[in-house]
Image 1 (tube, rainbow, N blue to C red):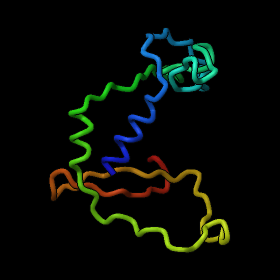
Image 2: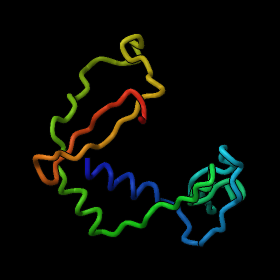
Image 3: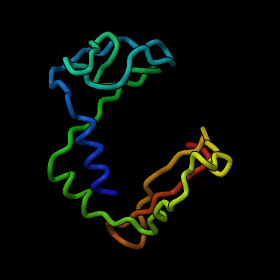
Length: 126
């Protein structure tokens, strides 16, 4: 999982520009721009995509991560990993894979074992 987080962090920065961008004022509770880093590879500009969220009165910018942060993530241990997918094609049996639009998945640190965690599903964010 740590490697997946590191890959996600690295993928998220692929093709990104390091130029600082002033946020476009938010549209109240609705975001008026996409979250990302526009550059010559995206075809988007700062009016439609920004590397920070300024929606609903909240101004959030993701933190920067160092190699030390990524190395620390790689040392974490997933307890009770999910079963590997079998030979079944989930598209051939869609009724067994009903979307749960309000459900969320979270990484939950294990209180008994330092550096260990579980991935747990919840019915909603609350």
